Length: 355
Ligand code: BDR
Ligand code: CA
Image (cartoon, rainbow, N blue to C red; front, side, top):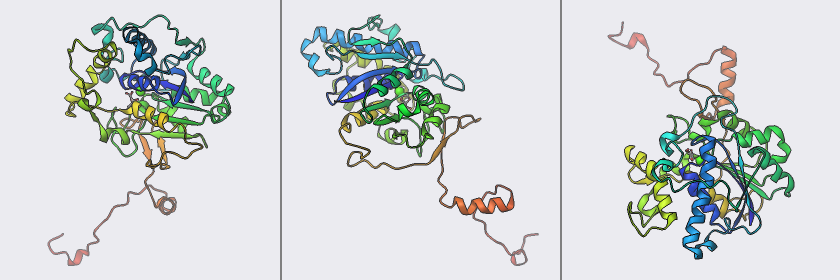
């Protein structure tokens, strides 16, 4: 199985992605490096522990399901759990609690207190060093091209790792990140996607890094394809007494995003941002080199991050000008930035009635 570091800010869809990773024999989940993001660092870190506590509870009631979670039951090789920064490398702290709830998981801390975070868990080894150092340690000790980083939150930890030891980060097989909106509208502002909005400085440092094996899954992919709830959870009923702990947990954490989506007029639907990125890494882990899966179109896109801005913080400013060189020289000659627009040339003398 391919080695994965999951950099995450759980977050409802991060939790769905984590459950997918725990259930996937194709990969080996080496570390979960937590960052602030959907909620505070304290909550996002605790939420990982909650997931492990929940899986433990589920398996104690359904022992046969243990084999369904190969990355949970990693015999003798606990997954490293590390804590990252409590905020972006620059700029103001912005969380997504309006969507994910005050604890990042639909407020289950209050509504379902029995889904509590254990102090520790045998399947997890809590690191004493920060997330980005754990990323560097793993990349350092493993052969080049064997570890994939799946980044499902703000890119803070990845940027810090790059600042500290760029050559070590270059050893990664791939860095697959969910973030940004290239042609799609934003979800945090009219023009910005949440992960990039939350730390646009980190995003810029990562995307501008030369030759980094960086793959982005932007909002453009997930927003037009929201998944309807009845498809996602066929057995969804709010109050079924027959649900397993895992079903109850998923039902509970989905409450808030589900309500928000309904309020936004999107129907009973959910956008699978982070689970899609996880699926991508799981299913295409075996493909050697930089060749990606058949059926996927990978395009090189040129953009820069708007890091500050009255209205545009976190926007991916995509350069769509095909003729930029020509216009560049005209501008240079005139010494002014000119808007180019189609204009009707009118001969005033022929234009009766116009004074
Ligand atoms: C991204 O932002 C977060 O709210 C989600 O977890 C996902 O990573 C989508 O914009
Ligand atoms: Ca996320």
